[in-house]
Amino acid sequence: CTILPFTRLKGGPMDFTPGIFRMKITDFAPGGQGRQKRATIPNQLALYLTMYSPLQMAADMPGHYQKHMDAFQFIKDVPVDWSKSVYLDAEPGEFIVVARKDKGSDAWYVGGVTDENARNYTLDYNFLPLGKTYEATIYADAPDGDGFDNPEVYTITTKTVDSTSKDKIHMARGGGFAISIKPVE
Image 1: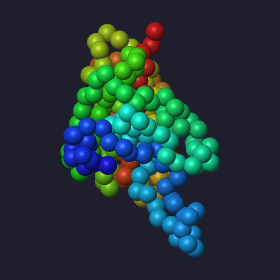
Image 2: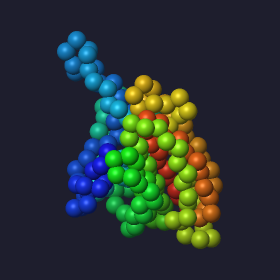
Image 3: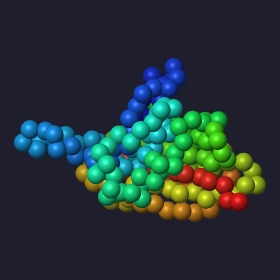
Image 4: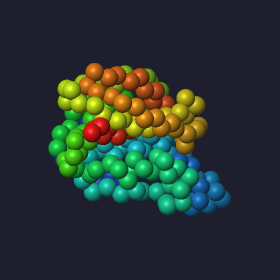
């Protein structure tokens, strides 16, 4: 997920199915010895932004979303097409952070994902228009979150931001963050 934006996605959108909320997949494996996806829930939310696909879906089973309806709200809110994309920071194979403006409104969305290394990222909101105020809802890895050992914990915070704001965001191993940024009227 930290390589495809620089390879396959250079040619245009691709079919990709993010939004997995249950990382330990044992239900369908013989003897319950299934596999574990190496990602966190905020990582899966961020993929709706880092992997451009104008046809999106919720890829997990409905029962897996029921325990996390607060995080599922991001999937309900995130648009599928954009009027502007700004790649804020990236290192192929390590991490990517992208901001996208909704094609049908003045809302922005930001997503960041990392590889198997945890990292702290300072998000600069300088891509936002000057003089406008926004409400940002931040879906981030919890302090004890980990894409290998504790993938289903996260935090959701809401704050007011503008083009001069900055946020320090922790991405767990296999983690990430997703932000919905809507104008304050």
